[in-house]
Image (cartoon, rainbow, N blue to C red; front, side):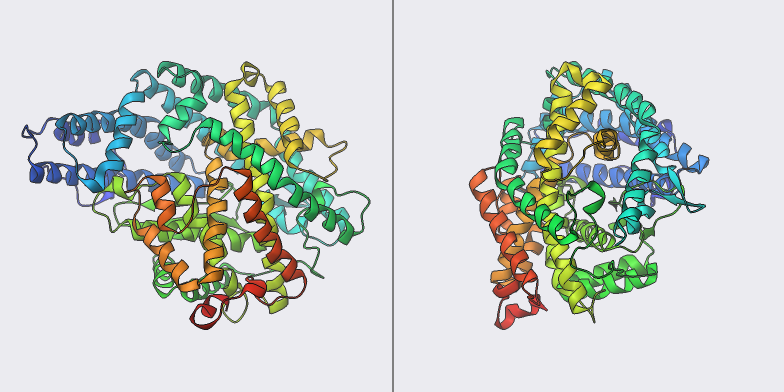
Length: 587
């Protein structure tokens, strides 16, 4: 219906006035009333195509900037999209969504999309556009500050991610030194980061109040299209973790303390592999890392392996840690061409393998969902996105062992143990981060930096048993300043917990019947965002978990795997390794 560019490159250097005419054309092109299906579908196709063109141009700018936060040209391009184009684009999206809703037109595979559009229309306020633009500026400032952090290590500069191997050293003094160095790097900028968060918090509360919400948590639930659970459900999740998971983590940590032979477990004792004689080194070069991942995914499923191979061949992987690179890792979608991209900071530790497998799960979701005709059908909430990634972490476990993967059989057993233990420990971390954010935005004291730090210490103590933090209160406080989600993606964290419990169910299904579990997983991926969240989970063969009883059941299942691996099991499925055709999953 309207003439559009052939490539996102057309918008690479665009400002909003260059883009606005295309959205104006969509907003004003005549549409029949009552709506004619073919006419509306052609209009939707143009809108979807335009969104993917602009979206991919902005994504490429973000990739360039996070890859080198010291590059001023890349920073300017990123800020142009994040501060000028995307906040204004949101206004146009609501304008077009309102037009579609007012037409009264729908079809079954768009019901979820239209429900999201209705929510976006209800909460949109023009006055918030400038606020979101300013928030993007603050997010970029956080990335720049934390991406530039480094420490001196024996006369050599190290990024914070590059300290990870030292946290796994057998020498406890080395671990303590690395821990203190990483914490101090953030503490040195604590006041600056606290002031930055003060500004972000105030703006977010203003956004919420402008839209008629009592606080930003309530606003975030509507903005994130959380139609199927509430803040009260999340509070129940926190309580269930305290009852069902914290005791299991206490058992893990007490065993760790005994294995290390120390009188008390300190925070620098949590990463070292207690069952290994030396730290696991899964790879030494990025090429080795990529080649191993290729083999692993091909063993999980031939189609998924071929998709990862496409990413490697098309250079859609930025994996190594380097100076100036933003911290963390992500998978993003190049929405026009239908390709995902992985960004991370690999330094040659087992966590890198887990991170790559996790982000690859997002990639497989993107590949599958791109087959859907419209951009909005391909988009899922984070709860479904993280189910894709966390399930892949567990489904890939059998193939981490050589010749396909990175480890000898004994090393693989240790890596599997570490992963299962991390499943439990991660739930306590997730609950504490989500509870902390809920406290910040629902308490007036959240606006005070000292009160926030005190609340973090109090909340964290509920979820982190056994570990001795005596004399390390400042270092413990530094942990939340390292959690980029709290700064950049508020309330994006409970999704990890819901997805982790869903992934354990996917894994349990794989134990019982591997091929069926893989097929259910792939059917779930292909649905994209076309169904409500409970239905998406059901397609994968799992359910959302907020209650203590189900959580205890899943914790017991993971603890059984841990016990069997400690007893020498040669499969992550332990004694429950499937037989016949399903045995392929067990390796």
